[in-house]
Image (cartoon, rainbow, N blue to C red; front, side, top):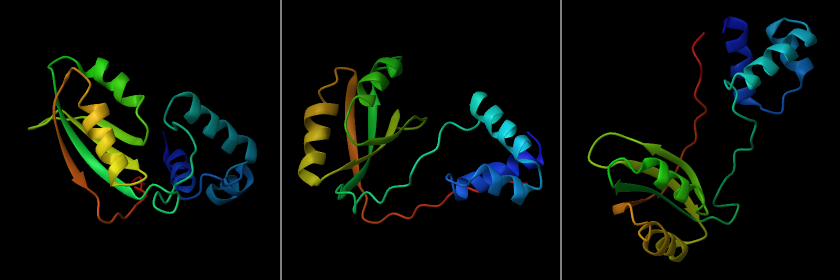
Length: 147
């Protein structure tokens, strides 16, 4: 990746709907060059997709929480597959420290969150324990790539 690729990524992070023409003009390359660079970054997995950023509360998901899990050693692949099937899971990570998995979830309300944690997550045999951290307020920030 060169400085033009990084400039294209920064533009697309700010506006994933930017046209090829707009991107090309702003990074000073031809439309064909911009298209080829974006296609290459998609093909190589640098760009994993294009998506809308959602205000979960306005979209009817008024409860958000980070959930930490302790799991049976070497069960990550099995647990990950089961967690991915759950509704409202936005992000999951295998982490180091006093717990094994960190998840961000969004649900309609606290009752749905309780159902998700107590009856779905804790029902997974490899999950040894959970800890739920309610989100009171959030601020999204688009990370900026260095030049």
